[in-house]
Image (cartoon, rainbow, N blue to C red; front, side, top):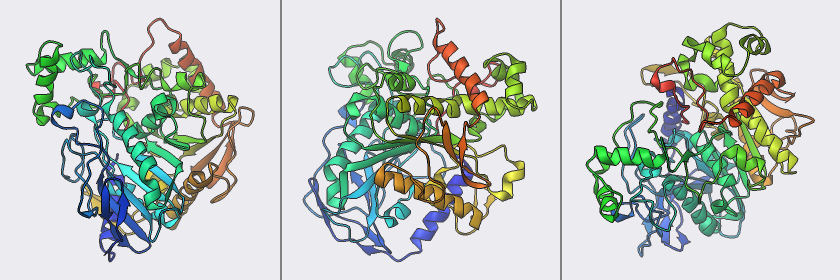
Length: 538
């Protein structure tokens, strides 16, 4: 996530902290009673444990039952973030991190059956937290929803395989995804106590969070835990890392274990791994292109296929689905402009590719190609699969850039839509990381109001409808329509970038049929620095 979004988040936090607060009335759940905080028309409950601490012998195991308490628990502060490399302002960090946070309309009560939205954060599966202020759920609660954020294990704590750990009968490797499912089960069991409707849950996330949403869509282990889904920049052709073999998850795990003095694949090795200091496991990676960076793993239980393969088979949850991406997803790889030719050639004949992209300079074409390969074309493919199965799908393209930086920007960067969706744009100028961040303009806020309203409508009804502008059409192959949030407002586009996306689709199908298909979507040029070797998912 970029510095600008973090600045927006802290501006939002300052605004919240300057508003008077009061203790909310106790809520009774199976674990015990808890109190939250009331600010204006919204109540929040923070730091609620939804599973047992994954520490000691519980490290690298499925999350255990949530703890219970007898006294009234004060749920007024966020819990620690999960172990990760530090980014942004310092925060308490611990392996004991499986907690969630809830915002609801003040006075909501059991039986109200309010729509529920559950957010899964991004962060390349190596960082992130549900407590980031940009994810504040106040404005969703003001619209009559219950908004939930939570922490899940990331890095080696969340996605790790080793023969010594994989020998049991239970689920393995994808511990971060197990945490996500545990949080969704907690919501299903407890939403009613907060006035929510457990049968009307929308799961949504961005980047690694959206990849998670897409894997939850195709995983049988998440069946029945949500009624709608939203994927923002969801890398729809992502494929899990293989569990075994060369460059597999287990091979990476064994190399890490041996580097830290743990050999063998028996129970003693498993115990030794679980006894390693947390800081040892949390050792930094060499960069976002590090081949050892954790990713979802083809464990054969939770995950049995790539995202697009699951959708193509009709194995995805048949629930209303909203998805999209931004116009400059290639911001993940700013160095692509230095090495444009391999990126362009990977799609096909360079002359034909450049022609499809308007015969612009190679660096500009490479940025567009990378954006389309990572996000835009896979989104179209998933929407087509759902349309063929008669399942509602809605697609967006976010290209809005604030006027103050529009002349120097290549487009809407990866993750830049989040503050618009949550309506957490800064209301006053602020400074973060040595950069001056201007307050949102009326035009900025207008786009935010529109996105927020469409997301709210989708969560309530399964259809974004005409919540804040034109009626959002359900995707069909014949219409090939999406909604663009751009400098000229909110508009329906038909056949969006069709010639370009057809080229990207053909290249993707050719790669899938090659004798040695690649996992995930490694589209950065080989000549680029190591950090460009694999697309991160902040």
